[in-house]
Length: 95
Image (cartoon, rainbow, N blue to C red; front, side):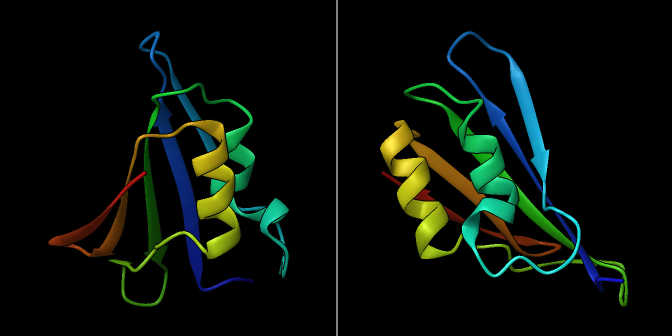
């Protein structure tokens, strides 16, 4: 089993919350990533939140989207992404 859990939540312009999680097993390609799975549910101007939870230490850890997921979110028109770094810290990406 994986030692972590990654989830992504999006807020669309219509106010709807949409979510996605990483696929099961190891996915070396972006299609298995939560951000890529979420991108299909978003509209232009959406805001995305991504978090990675470690089962080992029960803490949030870094969940910065990979370059492929960043490109997918950008092409979908996402305006901002917040991602976990650790429990008390997060990063921001503005497109």
